[in-house]
Figure 1 (cartoon, rainbow, N blue to C red):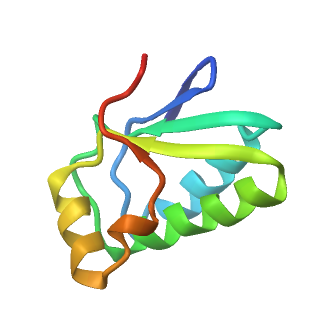
Figure 2: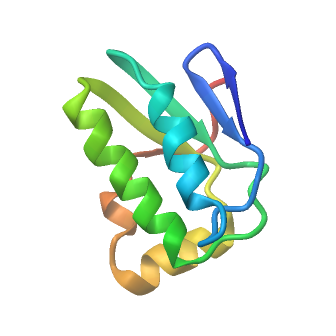
Amino acid sequence: MIARDGDLLRITTAMTMETVGPLLDAGTALFNSGEAEFDLSAVQDVDSAALALMFEWMRLALASNTTLFFSNLPQSLISLATLYGVLDMIPQRAVSRH
């Protein structure tokens, strides 16, 4: 579901209504003070719940003094974020640094 490699967190499953609950818990448990990056390069299926999940992670990261980034967003997620007018609100790195 989420594979950790240092401060890189690779999401290895869909980000849909069916998976956001477990992803929220798993991702939040990996936050620590410092920096975390979610790599979405392996994500193939998304729906609007993916955006809700990302914004909740952003809120929780702020509360835990963690700087959060997202990298390798799939085109389907970029399209959804653009449709909802929130793409510019997502802290992202175009390509993962790892």
